Image (cartoon, rainbow, N blue to C red; front, top):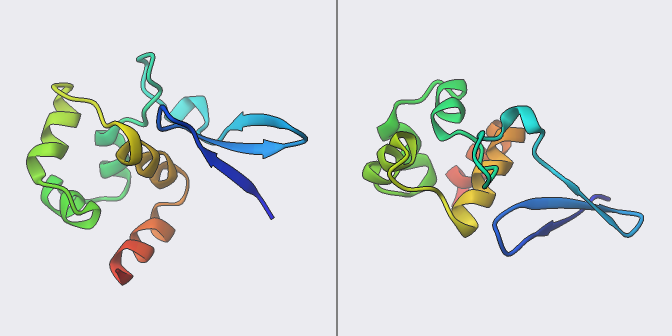
Length: 99
């Protein structure tokens, strides 16, 4: 069983042998220091419009637009959710649809 930890800065790490390993591969993270997966890239890979992506995440479409335009950056739980979506979008969207 994998042990994952949500860090205070929104990163998700895997715990192995007492060490932390980032869950998101570097190729999927933004070039910025925060390391958040690029929202536009995630949305396009899922083949969703901004409105559809916002509805699935349960956030206003303005939030998605602000993230994509760089006006704001996802923080905390939203950042963690986007990191998980980068790895298993179908699983995340299926789980969110059940709630």
